Structures are given as structure tokens and as C-alpha cells.
Amino acid sequence: MELLGWIMTGLLAGALARLVMPGRDPGGCVVTILLGIAGALLAAYVGQLLGFYLPGQRASFLAAVLGAMAVLILYRWFGARH
Image (cartoon, rainbow, N blue to C red; front, side):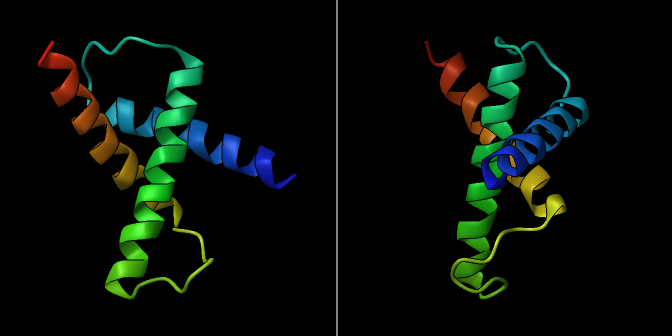
């Protein structure tokens, strides 16, 4: 059930990040889910470094969306370099 929770949170966070940052991005639903999951993991890691979260604690949904936006910015930046 925890994996399903990560997938659903990733889908929602990734979709919201793509909605806030419109543009042409390749990929469909699977890429959106992976974007959201990567954003949540990034937000949890950075939050732990800054002392907002304890080790093993998950990031909030808002932090996951902000993390997904950061991952999307990096994705677009490295994608444009080709």
C-alpha cells in the first residue's frame, strides 16, 4: 500500500508541477509519476539537510510539488543541451 501511496502522490505532484510550469515536455503519465516521486524524494532530502524533517520522515505535498518543479527545471535544462 505504501508503494501505491508513492505512485498517487507522485502523479498528483508531477501533474501539478507540469500545470504550474507549462511547456512542451515529452512523456506521458509514467514520466509525470516519476517526476513527482523524484520531486518528493528531493524535497525530503533537502528538508532533512535543512532540519525541517527527521530522517525517515516524508516531505509534505507542497514540498513534493516544489521538488517536482525543481526536477522539471533540471529536466528541461539538460534536455535543451542536446
